[in-house]
Length: 558
Image: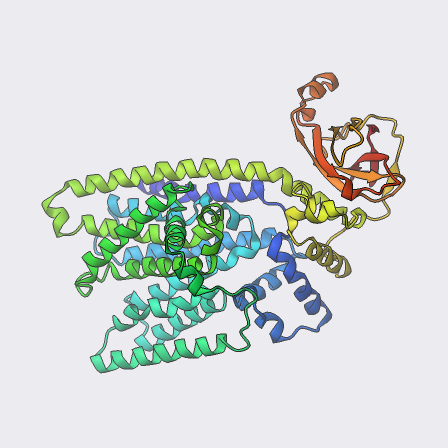
């Protein structure tokens, strides 16, 4: 019975994550993924070269993520759900690696050991990383974490492999991490204590260290070939704003726990101070505390990676560290290290003298689980509010052949194209590529129905004589379970659209009149600027797309 209960406790975070991804994932490329479309076209045409994989992405060489995503794209006609599943798989392997590291401890298998590992499992699969879980391009973060933890695992595990083989395997993991994200280069430096801890004579240890450092230097030299980053950070300007840098760094460390300005920095300070304490406690006699070595290295890697991110992003302010949940995948490694180091601490000599330490540890573990549950609720709420916009963007992409290159679609915060990427030209170019290689079906030869027999909604008459106005109304797809996510606006007799609106406002009156709960959120509204309109054309029409009949149906009124 105990085994079944423990298995269930380990399984619950995984099941919750799978359900979360299955419910909220939208099969549409987002942001940086659009930059991969030209790469796919070159592969499809047989014109690909190594330089296409080698080219910088921002300041990173993401060679291995490009290869992996390309393989998945061609296997699935670029179904975004494939990389999402792989991200979950990479996280699962990372947990298995941490579990194996925990198994090296002398007193594994008791309740305290399982508590630490269940907490580790919850953190690895935490929904606080929701941005990465739902964005296939971000599998690089999970890949880097897996590579570093695996490198440490190989180096510290007492297995049948010789030290040479273990160093070789660890070097391969660090090499993959280096060419997945720039902070992967740090894995070489952080792993040095584990290399030095390998068994052997002092002379042999020095040789291993020299070989390891030569491999690191060689990797850096390869990395620097034709390295011309598009965005450069001024270290001097950062030094002139030390408080901004410190605030960003601490907020980054605290973001997996709480995501609030000021509070995140205080929590980050507490987390960082706790890690420094454990470094001092276990680091003085590391030969006597070999169980702590892998967790100290994992924590150090998280800290140095956070510093690396801080150097590149601090200019955007701490609010960016708090709002960007993708960075929590890195910060969570530090929490995992603290959970495991805390377990080792309460088993130590001090804890034997004072048994209250175990009670305190269990209390803190319970508090952390409670905080994570709150974060789950916040992640679900935040993702739910963004779901309609992503669904609207998916519809927007399908209809992109009918969307004008208007100022609205380029710059308006309500533009459905800008949900896909702020650089809407990337979306249009990427859509054209996907159309050419046959990976996506875009609406073509759509019939415009100006006078439908059924009522699909109304466009309220907007006020006139203003430089901007609010277009509003309601829209439905009668006798269809799937209701429209967006309304499209046109001018005059054009069979193309200059703006969109999201159908997401409360409409209990519509639902009551039409006697269906499907229409509870049938209202829509959008602000339109006169820059989007021609002076000579002032007649605005509103339309919904009926995918069943491949028709644009006009709403009444106007």
